[in-house]
Structures are given as structure tokens and as C-alpha cells.
Amino acid sequence: MRAGIEPAYPFGHGLGYTTWSTNDLVIAGRTVSLTVTNTGDRPGKQVIQAYLSRPDSVIDRPVRWLAAFTAVTLAPGESRIVTVSLPRRAFEHWGPDGWEIEPGEFTVQAGTSVTDLPHIGYVC
Image 1: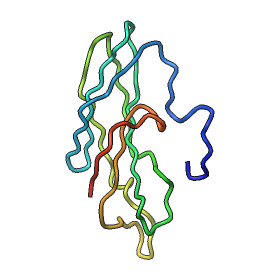
Image 2: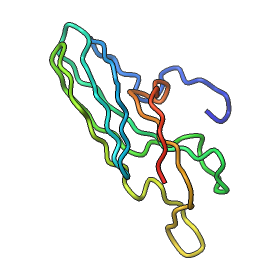
Image 3: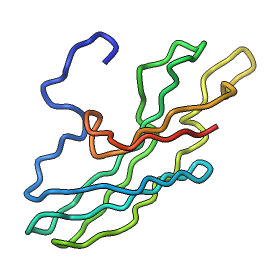
């Protein structure tokens, strides 16, 4: 939201009939894991999204960009560890010699929509 404008419906806002919680972010290499729980009283499907950002980048980048996502379907009260793999391409930019990765740390934000990213970690 580089321009400071809030969208009417953020990407991934969902219109389900249950509620969710996410906990226990784990980042191992380029793999992001979260425990997802259906806290409602109906079965449901939720999409877990992982975004990358690089506030100190010398490359002109968006504030954050969707790197990977996966869906999970759970019964009421059910929990599952959900894993999302961050592809190499999500870190790359086009440089003078082709696709390159800017050295250093990237911020990983994970959650259920672009405006609900409570889990933050770092990956090199």
C-alpha cells in the first residue's frame, strides 16, 4: 500500500462461514510453516499466504509481494501444520546478467490475507 490507499476488499479477505486462528510460525530455509485451526463450528477452507518484503532494497520493489500460498480444509476444532514453499523466483529480480537475487535478508509475513499478516520472520 505504497500509495497509502486501503482497498475495499483486500486480496484474500475471504467470505467463509467459520473462523480461524494461525500460530507457531516456523521458517526453515525457504519453507514457511504455520499451525492453522478452524475455531468455528462449521467446516471451512482457508488460504494461507506468504509475502516477502525488502524495506532496505536497492531494487525498486512493491511494499510486499505474494511469494506463495496454499489452501487447507478443516473440520470444526481441527488443527493442521500447513507448509508453504517459497520458490526461488519469488526472491529474484531482473538484472544486467538475467535473474538475480539481491544479497541479504528478506522479511517474510504470513497469514490469511494481505491485511492479516500477524506472523513475521526473516530469510536470507
